[in-house]
Length: 191
Image 1 (cartoon, rainbow, N blue to C red):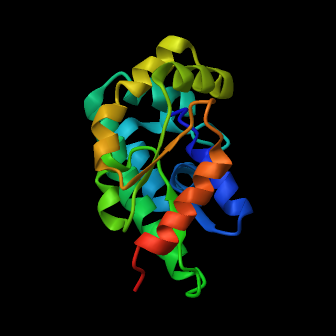
Image 2: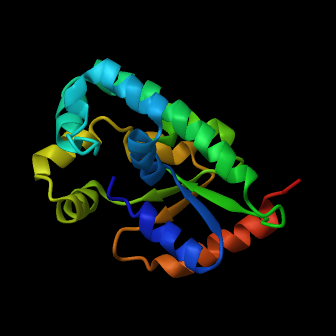
């Protein structure tokens, strides 16, 4: 949260690479996938959705970020739906694409990194991440910190990543992306 994954992925998209945005797709599936919507209502009640059918994000966030079991329950419903959606998306990609990218917030925590050949981690200091999330999402500093506490810290994720892009506001992103792409082209064998 607030590390700058989306910024990196927008640059990759601008360079012509296909990028699957797992978080955006999850939000869409939670509204458009009838089976997922039914499961969410069964787990969290009718209040999960507004009268117009939109997801009640405030209610759901309040529910899951204050209860670890509820968060696990929601993730157990959403992650499989996103996995199926990603597989469909991937099948629709041009087979000539040497690389496709998947943007996701909690790959290690959810175990979805296992389906990736390479994991690129976008890192930023916590104070920068908090500031970005407060400005972007209109949340309080405390709300952001509470959500970040539900995620693994950088110290645990960085050693698991194959490559790290530092998005601290001091190191330019584009040169790092070009180096990443060079590394992928020369170091990663693609069948």
